[in-house]
Length: 240
Image (cartoon, helix red, strand yellow):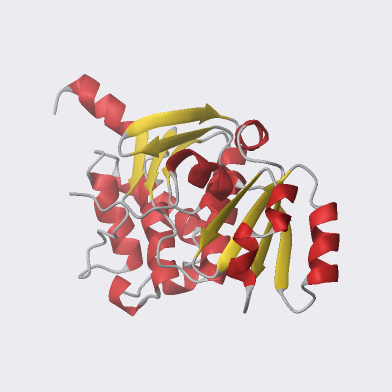
């Protein structure tokens, strides 16, 4: 590998969507072997391994093979492995796909620590709450085309209405064409839920409580998922 290409590679850490850990090696051995790809001195790699395992909350699993780990543990090991060369930029593809809530929150906490340490992170995700929590800048793509870009809260303020009321339960769908529709800037239907997007939800909530007391409702602020759906639509579009 040319020297300049190796120098660039040394500044990058990559966590792919699917784990590529070596099943024949222990957690510690996975880190050791991966570090050798960067031509790091073995003594330097071995010195980093305890810190990386501690960061990944896997110190007690150092001599365990990946097949014996949970999905969250494997994701954290993949993250630790990507840090073995102390990169300046981390590339992460769907880092929390398939994780339970506890494992996902632990991964978020570890990524926040890396951001505080000055690491740059380029993250792709379909979890909109993950994007809002981790990203200082958001790029929305639809079929590979950029739709918008900016700070998450700025984009939410610019595009979707600030208040969202979700109504669901027996009879909820009829609300989409009822007089209550006029109390929202726009309405959408998904499954058995009617979404009311408003500038001020209080009059609508009062009307729902008065006229449809048995309906279940959820009042919340707009979020990145609302932003994405407003810009791309709710319809399912198969790739191919």
